[in-house]
Image 1 (cartoon, rainbow, N blue to C red):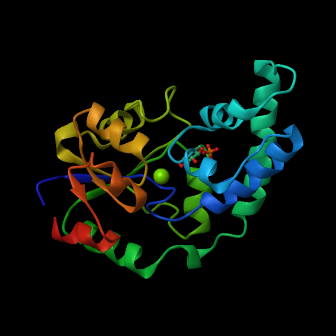
Image 2 (cartoon, helix red, strand yellow):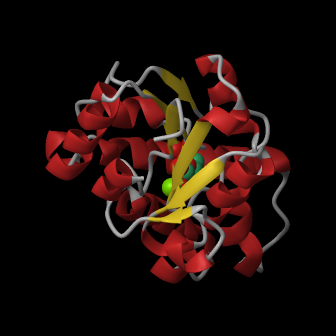
Length: 211
Ligand code: BG6
Ligand code: MG
């Protein structure tokens, strides 16, 4: 492989948290009387927490919410979400993903996380990957969420590598756009394949081994 490192998105690439995000946002949407379904939830992929709330509030018709209240609501959702994350375990990390990561590392590649989530480390711990990655760039060290490239630029800085040496793996359009915006090649997986934006389209995670 021509890269020195791979930067993986977490949610939707290494493991799947969509259903927990959905359940937690649904509690808040119901409270605010806002229609919310799984299709709208899919639009939140890769998008930061406050921007996600903004998308949910597109259908809100109540009295205008102050920024302070929006922050409080996003924290309320996050508490529910964190409770749900306790249901995750090593069973949420597939053998295919773990074996592929191990083989990539054995080939000498550095492995990093580039996630918009502020809960990335909690999730990695739940699925048994605490301390596994060489570097973690997540929602806690960025000001601008994907499609802004900041999270990936920070990841390559942490790895002490140039963007051209890094490959990003993403399941969301916003993530592919973020990678391309900082000159990184990207591999799409899942629904992101349909965007036709990526350098490579993966049918399966283990396809990374044949790039
Ligand atoms: C991304 C998810 O990884 O993290 C988004 O794909 C989510 O759906 C975002 O909104 C922020 O997550 P968190 O855990 O910081 O609320
Ligand atoms: Mg994702």
